[in-house]
Image 1: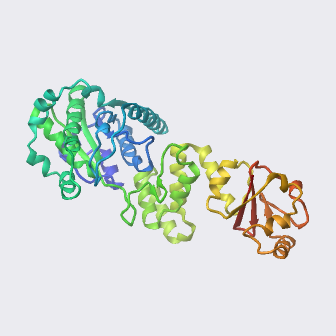
Image 2: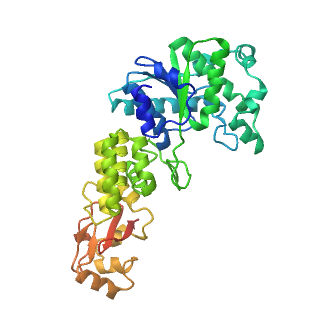
Length: 419
């Protein structure tokens, strides 16, 4: 078996294999592909797994083909779904593909790699129903398709439409087409795709298209069995306009100990020997959360770059009394999302004593308590300590046009929003 395969095994990235002997015979310049259905405006954190696998293979000299399902994405993959997806318009799908292609290119470039992009809409848009049934459909029995786990699961639940039932055949057609036209001999995907992947191998065998093999990787879940890359607020997107680098960083920092070391193996290219040393250090000092910090720093830098990582760390430090220098108002509001807040008119703020500002916040129950907090050195306005209760707000540093940050001690905050 090639070194790339052993590397994936050691990182826990191999689950199903169609033919180990055949896979071991494939070396440099062998084409492989992995597919993405462009049903979302951006790739998300969970999509890193197939991309990282692809980069391992590409680094070993194999030729990567990234397939976007311009055709299959328009009907929806039933794998891992208990109900049918909403169908998307062609213009939306094309826009999603353009965005996701750019994201893949950027990630591959960080490793000095490139990829060839293909879109299955290109070889299916002119395909007639009769041709599809004759050249693809005739090679599959209904019994074969019903035996697939994804179909059985849906039939036991809400049922499955003929549209989604046909998805397996379209994905099979992709593998056969890429083998015949681009010499792509390997397909891989998540373990929930294994039924569709092996159907592709079956079509290739029955049509005599050539030799091919496939493998799957385990679905990445946390210790509670939930899919990686989803927060309570929804998906963690790779597009920074949908999920900021700071929010992604915080999400990864909150990873459980049981998951963080495993995620480092799966999602990063850090040498395994180095990860073993990190694991020992992490287990010796779990309170330092070394694995979580390495995971968050590595992935944010990989996806968004070093500047975004530095910004995320500056934002993180703000919560622990760090300076507000270099923080934008938009970043500030995100950092303090959920922190108690109040509103004051801009016209009133200039002559307002600091003690009055604190007395109207969640940090002091009265004017007297506010004065004591200030005189004892525990009050900070926009990160700067104030010690005179009668000092007016207008004489203080106000770097943000629409908000003032009040702090009590090291970790208690209140936002004053200016209206």
